[in-house]
Length: 120
Image 1 (cartoon, helix red, strand yellow):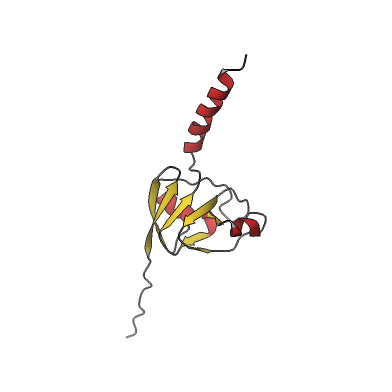
Image 2: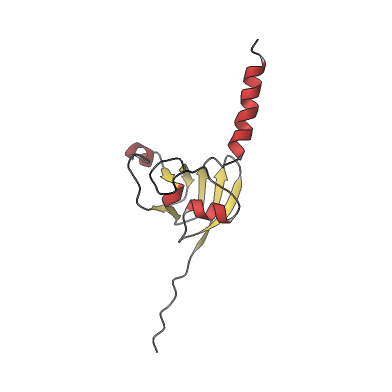
């Protein structure tokens, strides 16, 4: 009888700045899926590497980047350590800079409210 050894999935800790939120993500799942599974939702739209809405900046760590459209992530973005959460698989623990759905609106609303309060 032949038994194939199951491929072991590594689990990595992903820290999302500026929120200091974190989640665990498997090496066989994208950052977007890992965040959702753990109750956080990174800002996104198409989930297919075509729109660029899920663009995050890698502050520390490494990812494997799957296929994507150049209009979603260009060479300048790559050189500046940006990646797409919907197409990125962690290869190590990561620290990323990203927007979480639901959190930025509250932050931006309070700032806008203050800015417009002084207008006559």
